[in-house]
Image (cartoon, rainbow, N blue to C red; front, side, top):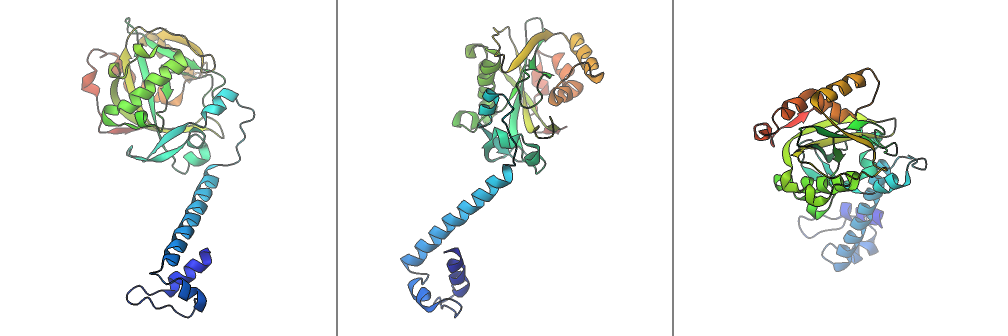
Length: 289
């Protein structure tokens, strides 16, 4: 059908009376004049076929033969979640699975998605850290900030005004990972500071390529961590975090690359000004790291 359509398209002159050239079969030409319903139906059918072929090719390009048989079953199920695809200016361009977004083969082709990193401080101005569980597919066992995840391609988390969709996603994940009741971490309590763009490999197959929204909050919260998500957690002072960063340099513990980048560039300056964060809010620029 597709070859027949292209024959007609090549044969038709649309500037006047739509005269069919001799390279189209005579019977076919009579039946599929451009002004006929038969011709329009053929174009529609072939367009659907071509679109289906393109989708299959795109899917095939994004789905290398990566086995997940050896990975944690619950974490593998989460790979079906739909992340928000963006361009380098954080403009939404589509959606794709968490699996596709975290495969290095796709990341190296430029696949980029939206993410967030939450930093929760208690009343003593200590920062809540988590150690990612050994079941995590990317950066298992690494220490990181309070919560790091992705808004999903859903109506509530796609909403972009004042980053409300991202903040709703953070509320959802704080409950899922740390067991914090949602009423204790409402979106309006989270301060959206800025965004960072980074890329990092976890291993040969998996990695991260994100524009990461930085969210700050100071509050004493109740914790009931999910062991499938979190291996351990702790509150640290500035000095204790500096000591952890030094240990990471000596390979005595592991820290996620995004947390290390943030800690080495912005974190302590923000931390010194928890009561005056507005001066650091930059919703225009994206920091490339």
